Length: 137
Image (cartoon, rainbow, N blue to C red; front, side, top):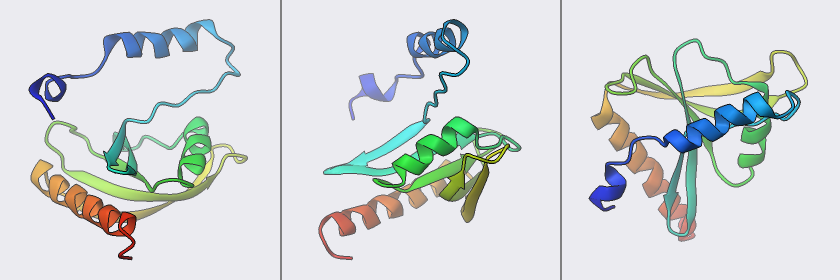
């Protein structure tokens, strides 16, 4: 990836659009934004959503995650510090949006002390994806 892409941090216009959607549209117009989609030719490796400790999976997220599970694994990355970690990684296996709050099935995958360990975990995830994409699994 080139430095122009590498140095992008967030999108104020995207954040403003999401905020305005919540302010100006019907409260019945649920929406969800995933934090991160890992891609690798030929497609989608995994969907990641970042959460601070104690943040629950929302109704809208359960709806979105359940659909995404049909095309990709979904992982929740939890950390008190997105800058440094540590990171706890959970795989989302499914959820029931009918219950309030929604019930979800999360399986603990691993803990990464910092970005080095997280990068190694992601590298393994991508390697598994390449094997599956090439019909090796």
